[in-house]
Length: 249
Image 1: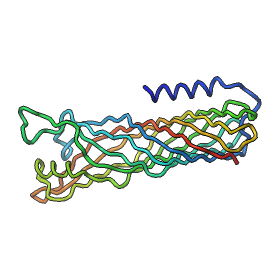
Image 2: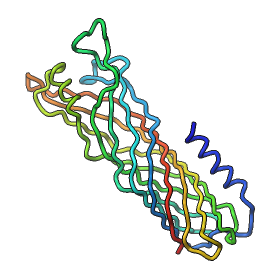
Image 3: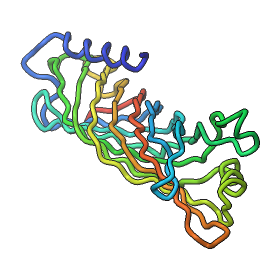
Image 4: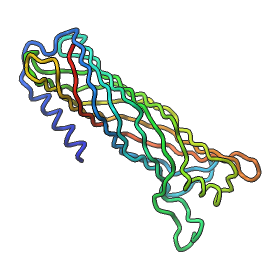
């Protein structure tokens, strides 16, 4: 709800700003450096073993992550720009809930939320932005819509999950986690506040919503040297918040 409220507030600022003949001038480039926080609205399908055995009520959770953000805008026309969201890798812890309890399967049919592993991700996002106010204004709200590409890296399985795979599923090799890259739609609202009408330095605050859907796969060898694969579809769908400083060229 906080994410929705912030997005609505920024959008209202953008749409309610006074109108003039033009805003940021065509050809301007704005570069911003800041701090970003990713808050997933995660959901997943039940985990499946070898594509056939489903584990009811299991779910993968993606925890929050933060990193440095780099955003830029190129004004290709009055009121319209091409925006880019980039960042250093965001690191997220992964949890899994609902796994069968190997110790007391009858009295306690499922484990609670336990560590599954971790990963890093980069979410480069390209948007077309609309700046509604005049170029004389030192407050420049904007909205944008576009596309996101997210790539995942440095996936790792936790020692807790590794022990579970060994004790319950007979794993004899180190479990490997692989998360597919994702393409999806993106929306953003933001605001640049210049340090005076004649200043090129500015403060920026922005929020994005990213459609990130992916498949997670865990694989390991069992005691019979067969590959065991655990898969699930994961909807990450995060809100991304950023605050920082920028410069208008």
